[in-house]
Length: 249
Image (cartoon, rainbow, N blue to C red; front, top):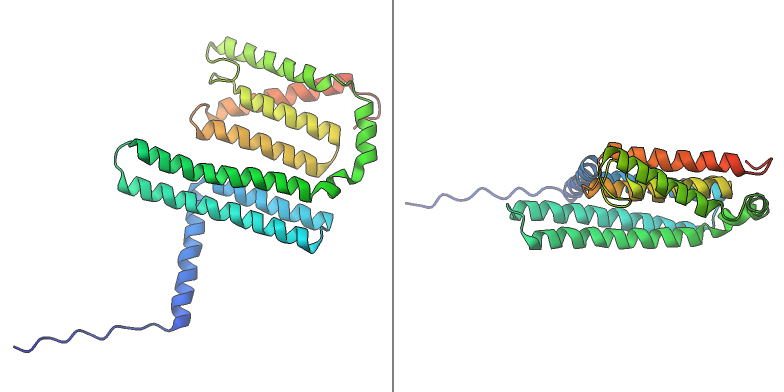
């Protein structure tokens, strides 16, 4: 009996294979964007950074650095998503090594994100300090101890909130997120004192990262983080209005 010959392998044109590869890659980006809150955050932050760079008319070399940093952060977030998917596929139980794999992948994204923030500040330094005289005048009219007093009041307010709901300590769990309260209080003070939209954007972005980490870590719910953020920002703004000199703001 003669063997049945196998059908010839269908070879697709090179351009079809290339388009299919791009399609799969794009589907991966879309999946990570739809399923990973951090991916959405990185994309929004990257877009904001690039728009700010255009607004400040940074030099081409600075723009290149920002583009590379944004791309690296997003690429690492995609790799982190891939690692999590592989670990979930290979491990059905909560194995300690599975946690190590996920934590270290997330740690890589965190390290690069922090480095990107530092480099971003250095790149934007000239644009941020362009209004230096106006910022100095505003700071000179505000009491030097405003920041410390405000943060102390926010900490006290957070403690009262946790005591009222009888849950948590100042910076650990509870009905009001102390981390979110302190972070948004600091961001509000930076925004009010600097009087610079870019500085305010970076400050609130950092506060948002702090709040988001509390939700992702399962320490607080979204409502607890929102309550802490509103408490911190609201108290800071109210205190600033009480003590600010005339014509500041």
